[in-house]
Every structure is written in structure tokens, then in C-alpha cells.
Length: 231
Image (cartoon, rainbow, N blue to C red; front, side):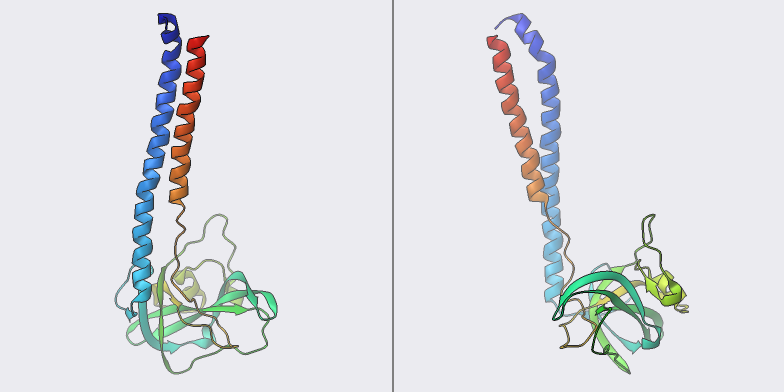
């Protein structure tokens, strides 16, 4: 091995080391993200298995709670668009948003569940004082590419309680939404959520990808460097 050969390998080696450190850093970061995400998923699973707690104050996102009040079915609105499989085939539908009036508390907007646009049966409208269990969904805000709401028809595409409440003529609305939980009613609508949402967890695959690229980089560099030294 001559001094000239070593000189020619210096800068390529330096560049490879920089890229290797970056790839290893990205892989390690994904490992940390994996542990963080697993902790979140475990917390969600514990909350889902536990009974709902009475709603109080301003709970955190995805807290499982129960609340009582009177549903204002006359102020029902629709949110979003979703296609689901039904007994008659795939159908387009929306989510039913109904204000829940509570004694001495801000009105709470409740996402009661999915309702198909075309249905043969009536919507189950509960009257009187009702108790609803569900999870807390923080307010969303319209972005540059969000679909435009249509307050005249009570059709909304951003789950923003302040905007929806104002369009419905409500003056004091809680700053979050309650997503109702429960088993699907037999041949009735709406269909409430059956479980708490879970964020995707692909960090293991990402970590393997970054570490795999780091390994491939080392192998390719070693093969190239060996060829340079033997030339």
C-alpha cells in the first residue's frame, strides 16, 4: 500500500464516514421513536380497556370519558365523507355531529358516528337526558387545502368546534369534540366508533432501512477501496 493510494482514499473515506454517521443517527432516532410510539400505544390500550371517567375540565386528547346531557337533534350537522361496506355494498356517508347541552357547562359537540347518505332506516335520535361514552378529540383547524365548509347546509369538513358551533348559533361551545364509542346498533344509524384511534407505528421498518443502508454503504465502500488499493 503506497502513500499515494492512501492519499486517494482520504476524501472518499471521509465522505463515507459522514454518510455512515448520518445513516446510523437516523436509524437510532427511529429506534427512539419506536419506543416512544410503543409507549403511546400501550397508554391508549390501557385507556380503552378502562371504564370511561366523568368529563371534567379540559381533558387531554383521546381521554375516554362519559358525559350526560340533552342532545339537540334539531341542530344536527354532518362532518367529512367516508365510504364503508354495508349489507347492500359500499356506501358513501358522513359523520353526525349533534350538540349536547349540559347543565351549567359549555355545549359539547358530539360525533355520534357514521351515517350513510342513502339509508332505508331512520336515524336513532335519543331524547331526554342521555349518557354518552367516548373519547376526546382536540379541535382541528382548516388548512390551505382543506375542503370548504357549507354552513348553510350544516356540512363541515374540518372538525373545529368553534366554527361549527358558531354556524349552529351556539354561543358557548367546549373547545373539543366528543367521539362517541359503542357497539354498532342493529340496522340503525349512526354507527359510533368501536375503539380509540391508534397512530401508525412503522418505526421498526424505518430503523431497519436506515441501518441496512449503513451496512450496504460500508460493504460497497470496502469493495471499492479494495479495488483501488489493488489497482
